[in-house]
Amino acid sequence: MRVIVFGGTGMVGQGVLRECRLAADVTEVLVIGRSPTGKVDPKLRELVRADLLDYGDVEDQLAPYDACFFCLGVSSVGMKEADYRRITYDLTMAAARPLARLNPGMTFILVVGRPLWPLLREVAPNGVTDSEKIGRAMPRVAREGVPKPPLTNRDINAL
Image (cartoon, rainbow, N blue to C red):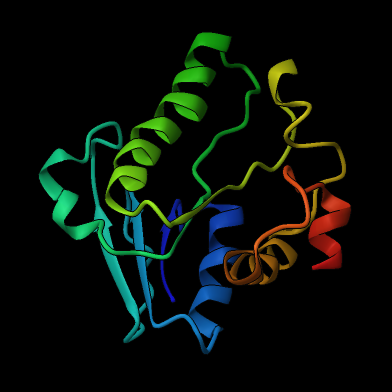
């Protein structure tokens, strides 16, 4: 399985990246983010980008992958809702659209840590699951699918 991890240097992304690197059936991990992870691994490749809203110049590097774990995000503390939406929604969609076009069978998993605005309360219920548990669950979700979306913390812990 070839996977893409967005945000591999963040708290949750580090856990997902760790487990992808350890998973025997993951043959390649492409990490996309604003800064390098500092990790060295034969199955790891990094794409460091200042602009995470446009992938037109690197689309050839985004295909073919089997799964994407989108772990980019920020805390909403002190942020205006419009700025938070740009980071959480616009960045996600900027990546998801070309990936869906290039890899129609890809599993795209948006990893959301906490509900930070009311619109996310349905997607990410309270009760933060630690990043190692999330990391361990994500390769399994990509391999086997999910019993029902969205996954709650209880679902992730069970996986």
